[in-house]
Image (tube, rainbow, N blue to C red; front, side, top):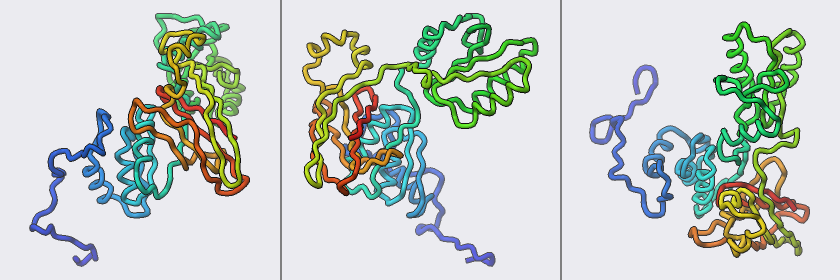
Amino acid sequence: MDSSGKKWYAHPKGQLPSDLFEIGIISRSAKEREKFPTQKPEALIERIIRASTDKDSIVLDCFVGSGTTAAVAEKLGRRWIAADINKGAIQTSIKRLQKLPDMQHGIAHYRVNNYDANTHLERRDIVIKKYGVQTDRQEAFFDGTLDGTLVKIIDLTKPLTPLDIQTIKDELENRPDESRNITVFCYGINSGIQAELKEENRRRAINKIFARDIGSEGVTTFEPASAEVNFERDGDSVTVTIADYISPTILARMDIDRTIFDEQIDDFHAQIDCVLIDTDYTGEHFKIVESDVPKKKEDFVDGEYTVLLPRPDARVAVKIIDMLGEETEITE
């Protein structure tokens, strides 16, 4: 300990550790491998977490990938938050975490974005066709015009944000001669934005910005999957049975008609990647209490589950995730 009270620890061999982590040849065992292209070995992540966190710390991984950080944090007794825009990464991570022998905290699954359409261009084209937007190939920033206004289609995988509005204002600053108003198409609007735009438009003579939430107007950029799920209570337990499941997105990918679907896939279970059950659903978040994650890709989910209830009035919810990552939530 020096005069300032700071403690200094000597390396056992008389030298400080270098900034190069020597953990040997990548030691991912067969149990670790998830066939994810950017997967890291648990030994590497464990060293980082041990060096930078305490038992009561929260570990955040914004690009969870194969779930290595979440898995190691769970094993070390840390709380954690994991996120990824890639649905395949979320599926892989959930499967991996469900295999851990002792989950100390359980998994709460939140779906933040609507990311079911294939690409931004496909979603943009759907909006253009539905609303009759006139496109202009010479226009680099705006997506076209509609009823005399310039049209901007915001990324439809997330709600409209103040940053989106500011980007439009910055573009208008570079167009001093532009007098047209702007119509912004989005899927969801963050609270407060509409009120702010209304107040700004009251003061503006030109370049007024009007936001249109296609979701609230009944327009979707994809057709959601549908499931038939039955719940049968018996005392302190409930039997959940998935009677049917169909995904228009999968049908589109297979390029077949709904009427011949059963001739192409004999068992609807083949579309389902995993089943998650919350036996005390509050509506705020989905806490995974029971899960059916087949060990092999060729295996099907069981489709019928008997689970215990924490109390007689508990509400049960089922989340089905299909082979393309689309999520369908059914509540009792």
